[in-house]
Amino acid sequence: MPSNSKPSPPSGDGGQEKQKMLLSSEHGHFSLVKALHLADLVTELNVMSIFSSMRYCLGDPSDYGALWAALAFMPFGLFFDFMDGKIARWRKKSSLMGQELDSLADLISFGVSPAVAAFALGIRTNVDHVLLTVFVLCGLTRLARFNVTVAVLPKDNTGKSKYFEGTPIPTTLGIAALMAYWVSQGWTHANIPLGLVAEGTIFEFHPVALMFILHGCLMISKTIHIPKP
Image (tube, rainbow, N blue to C red):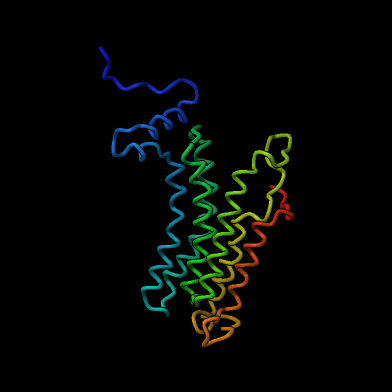
């Protein structure tokens, strides 16, 4: 007679094998949640910046509390990115979900979050929308390329890649720091530095949005090699 007992996870890397079994299981509404490790949950905290920017858009434009929170969560995103790897090594558990969540979290923390904060700040004309979208797509492309090419980049004696191809996406924290300075000076909405170009036309945009395009181009560059620490 067929047994009704559940199959036990294969021997070897118990953490990964158990996760494979949970992810491929057709039973259980919460099998996906069970497949997450603590490091994966830490990674997912990166979405807080976006919600803070949205809260600022819905409130009093002169009350910068939520906007400060949105900008503050971005460097925390770098901390979470560092901690999820530390947690995984501490628990001696590698996570298949974590490998995918890491890139997605980086896109949210250092791609989508700065763009949404810029929108909340007042960089929101039609052309601004296009420029910010291109910036996010550059971040997405940079992370996708990293996942594809990491295995073929030159390695050192420890097996770690010698350099980043293009600027790493966490360098967008420089833009977040600049926006934080603007907020501290009250340079938001109508007071954004350099003002508007082609004001009153469908082509109006904020020149400062071009720094997002510049940063996006640096991220997807194949000729810029940044040595890994």
